[in-house]
Length: 324
Ligand code: EAX
Image (cartoon, rainbow, N blue to C red; front, side, top):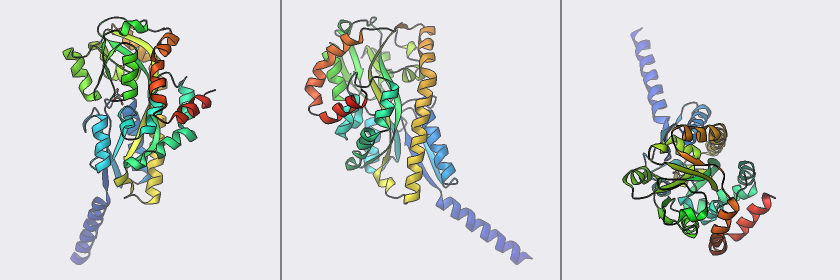
């Protein structure tokens, strides 16, 4: 009897050890808080992977810049210290030039047309362009249309940007666009923005509504203007080093989970954006909801003249044609 009990104990122990040894943990990093559209995307990704792998692969979500700013995380994925990220395209253009095409101001006309472009051949072609940088572009999640906040004055016309110290993403197209508007653009990682606003080293920033509300920005920004000056995708990205350690079936799981993440982020933006604007007003922000977008578009035209030629001009033309 004792021999059977011992055998069961040994076999159970071996099985458990085997399961523990077989379990793999991967980090998924992003800069917004967990309670955000990125957090909803991250949870959707983690749930899908854990379900498809029967718990053998676990995703550890690292929100709020826990593993660094978006540029740091991209560099971490290139060397394999970070496995996965949901990242705005902001800094990615520095590693994957084709991505800059997505960040041009006033290029996308609506959420619907942005989804049509990103989920079609153009978006898939750009995801494939990640690989030479040691990155695997898995899917296009969503950050949203970007708007401006500041602590100095209401912005109603392009002239109101004059002299404003405005934080931009580390993206030379955005830097050029806000310089053309007369602002003084200050590129920096998102992880430095809230402190910089509190210290007054910058006057304002620009981000989608869900980022503004997820960070309670009414506490440090009095004015908001719904410029909608750029559509900001969020890429679901994996380190190629870790991708290559997956078998084909697992790689299909990661692509499926990335699509689930993308859908979750788009759903959260669609559900929360209007309520987010009301929340901003309820918390005392002065919100300019209607602006003369043509005036702003005309003011940033030099960016197209200066940068479109440099960054895959055919991509910008394809994006425009696909929205006709
Ligand atoms: O990806 O840096 C930014 O403004 C991004 O929109 C933010 O980190 C979410």
